[in-house]
Figure 1 (tube, rainbow, N blue to C red):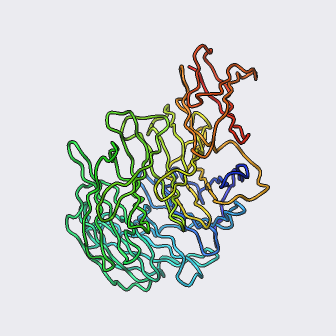
Figure 2: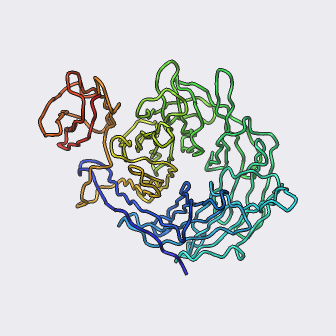
Figure 3: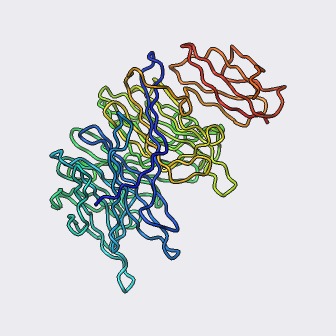
Length: 518
């Protein structure tokens, strides 16, 4: 019997004006543990689009028992992105005798379209002698009603050198086979192809291939035809850092290792792009996502770069600066995910955060979404679920999911300290009529810093044109109007305190935000 324990906090749908090319709908939900727990924690969700256009999400959870981390289980949710509602959910408890890899579960449609696959690495707990246990790939079938195959009936495949496996790098389904990469130790990846019937077709180990331990590696498709894969890697030097892509052919044999130029256009690869890999385009190029920093400039953020596969030359880039502007390399834009459309346009999502911690710390940052053409010209850009100081929201453990006409972002969210909430944020490339508009979560601009002293800076999406900024005190009195140089709002001479900023666009649309003058 499935346990449906879901409290919907609120749901809403919204659109921009008809002149614009996309809308967004969102769902917030709150999860309640199936039984009393003294410490309960959610981890990064993973989602995929099902054959019927819905979204299936796996939200891993864990708990603390007797001051030790204990496995807990997975919540599976099926979401209708059109009507913005939860259709069904089920809690799947972890096998007590196994440790499950919660970082990279595979969710996929079965080849016949009559259900789903849930696959993940499972590790047998330490033996009585304290030695590492063995590691398997467990493939569980889930029917259309979210009935999950019991653990003892699921297919388990023993992996090569299973006693030395440390973690999964990435996993994909290709027809009736699963392609995965995992680590033996820190520097030695294994590439494997396993059928859904448990047959191991290829399993190739590469000793000491990775250049640096402790790095987030990723698995991606490097070429569609002929089929080629790649593993991202990272090498750090005293003066320069480099991204490296190890390319494998369809038989999972190492073909080449590509060293990516470190700082084209004065952009330094601060870190790989959170393991989201790259996108292969039809013109023999690829797009990569990174966290970046600028040389001798106080700028950090997320970045997309386009490279030629043959010459390895950087052909262009698009920058998405952090808000607020940070100079520390651990306080920057974090790529959430990206995908391409049928005409090689790019969807991209990222988040910024200042990585603060502690009971008195206030996290700040925006979540950004954008559509770009294949040459990385930004077609539109929006900022949503704005920083804690603006809307009270703080988001993390975010995931990216492609849907029929756009993409979705899923992640954990807090508002003013309230925990255990998840959001679904849908972005569509269409313009349906008669959807009520809600302004609380979406902006065609970002503004910083907030609080501010003498000036407030605004950065606008390229598809909108601001015409006026008005500033009101909390009694509704107009204290400042500005109709030119709208990238900066002058706050000099104003008393300290809170104000309401109204930004009006050329299409007549206006937005109101709270700002603080220090």
